[in-house]
Length: 469
Ligand code: GLN
Image (cartoon, rainbow, N blue to C red):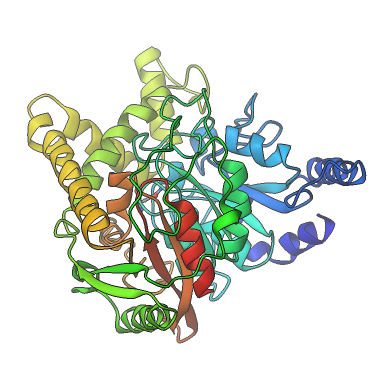
C-alpha cells in the first residue's frame, strides 16, 4: 500500500485520483495484514485497488466527478465496495471519471481530465477512464468501473488493460450513483482475464438491496460444446473453468462491426486476434447484427431519459450542492442545479426530459424502447443459432487527443457504436488487449478486442480471453 501511495504521488500528472487518504489506506492495509496473520486471508487479501468515484464509500468522498457532490461523504459502502473490502482488498482511493459516468473520454469531470499513461495528450477513454489509467500505470493492481454503454470496456481497450461488463443483474448496483438504471452495471478492470476472474467472483452475487439483482441464474439454456453455460451468481466460481480449451468454439464476427469509421490499425489488430483464435482451434462464423447503427440513437434516448429521472434527486435540499444566493425554493433548486451540474450532464438532462415529455414520448422514448427489443432479438438470434461468442473491436480508433471534438459534443457519441448494443441487451462483454496502433502524436496506443457472450456466461468469456492471453 505504501508503494502504491508513492506511485500515485509520482504519477500525479495523470490526474487519476480525486481522493487519496494515506491514513485510511494504511489502516485497511494493517487489517489485511492481520487477516493474513490469522489465516483468514484469500487470494485478494491485501490487494491494492481503487474505486471509480460513482461507488459510495464510507469515510471517503463520493463525488461522481461532479461539483454537485464535491463535498459529499456517504454514510454507507456500496455493495461492491463492501464485498471487496470484506475479501481484504485495500482501497488506495477514489478515481476520477466523467461526471455521473456520462462520457467516453474522462473529459467531462468537474476535477479535470485524466490522461492516458501511454500518451498524456490522449484520453484514457471513459467514463471509467481513471480506473483503466490507474491499472495501466500500475498505481493499483485492479480498479472498479461501471459500464452503462461501454465505460468499462472502452477505457480498458484504450489503456491496454482488461475489463469485463457482467450480465445485467450479476453485480449489485446498490450504492452505485445512478446514471441509467436499466443499463448500469459494475465491472472490474485489471491487467488480465485471470485477474478479473477472482475480482468478479467476489463482486458478483445476489443482493436483496438491489431489486434488479439476479437471484436465479441457473437453468440458462445449455448448448452442446459450450465451455461454461451455467453460472449461479450466488455461488459463482469462475476460476474452475478458466483452463477450458478453445477447440470447437464458434466465434461470431458481425459484419456491421467492420464498416465505415473503423480505422485500419484497429481492423488489422482484430483480424490478427481472430486468426490467433482460429489457430487455437476456434471456428470463425460470419454473422450479422443488423441494428448495430441504431444502437446509438436508441441508447442516446434511453440513457438520457433515465438520467434525467435519476438526477432529479439533486435538488439542493437533501444533499449535494446548494447555491449560496437564492430568492425562494424554486430559485434555490434552479440555481443549485445550474451551478452543480456540468455542460454534458445538462445536455443529457435536457434530452432526457424532452424525450419523456408529453407529445414526444411516443415519437422518441417509445420508439427507442422498441428498437431496444429488436437489438436484444438480434443478439439472441446470433448467440443461440450461429455462435457461442461474438468478437469485434471495442472502439473504432485508438485513444484520441484530449482536445478533439471540443466544439462538437455529440461526435464522441458515435464512437460508442460497438459497445452500446450489449448494454441495451443486458449481455456480458469484455475487452482484452490485442495490439497497438498509431496515435495522433505518433506514439503507439493500445487496441482492445471485444468478446461478447450470452447471459451469465462471464465464465466462458474469461476462459476464452485467458486462452488467448
Ligand atoms: N459513452 C457512453 C455515455 O456517455 C457510455 C458511458 C458509460 O458507460 N457510463 O453515455
